[in-house]
Amino acid sequence: MKKFYLKNLTKSRLLAGQLSELLKTGDVLTFEGKLGSGKTEFCRAIIHSLGYNEDVPSPTFNLVQTYEPGLDDPLIPPVWHMDLFRLESAEDVIELGVEVGFDTAITLIEWPDRMGNYLPLEHLKISLFQGDIEDSRYISFKGSSNWEQRIERLNV
Ligand SMILES: Nc1ncnc2c1ncn2[C@@H]1O[C@H](COP(=O)(O)OP(=O)(O)OP(=O)(O)O)[C@@H](O)[C@H]1O
Ligand SMILES: [Mg+2]
Image 1: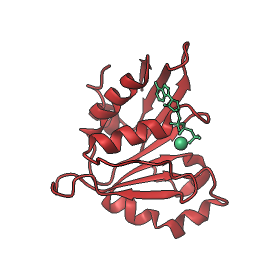
Image 2: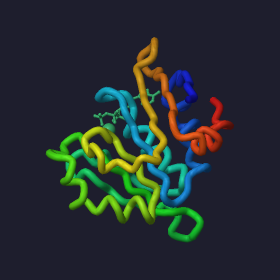
Image 3: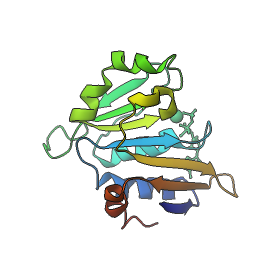
C-alpha cells in the first residue's frame, strides 16, 4: 500500500506520468472515490503521458473509450478507459468486450464495483479522496506483491 498527498492538479498529473511509465499490456487499474474526486483527471493524465495528444472526455455515457496513444511506437499498448457508473448489471460488461481489453490493452476502470466478479483479480486498486484544501487530494495504491514492487519508486 502506498499513499500520497497531491497538493494540486499538477501533482496528480506528475504522479500519473510516473505511473504511466510502468504500465504494460494486460494491466488493469481500478479507480475508486466519490464524484469529482479526480478519477477521470488521473486517467486522462495517464493517457496523455502515454503520448495521446487529443481530448480525453469522460466515458460517462459510452462507458468505454479506447485509445491508441503510441501509434508509431509498438511498445505502447492501447488503452481502454471505462466509467461503469451507469452500468445496469454486472454481466452487461461482457457486451462491452472487456475481455479483449484485458488481453490486449491497459485497462483503466472507474466505478469497478459495478462489474462485480467480472473484475480481474489481478489489478492495482487506486483510491482518491478530497484533501484539506480545494484542489488537494489523497491517493492510495493497493495491489498484489507484484504490483507493490512495481510501484515502489513512485514519488511526488
Ligand atoms: N489534485 C487534483 N487531482 C485531480 N483533480 C483535481 C485536482 N484538483 C482539482 N481537480 C478537479 O477536480 C475535478 C475532478 O473531476 P473528475 O471528472 O476527474 O472526477 P471523477 O472522480 O472522475 O468523478 P466521476 O465519479 O463523476 O467520474 C476536475 O474538475 C479537476 O480539474
Ligand atoms: Mg470520472
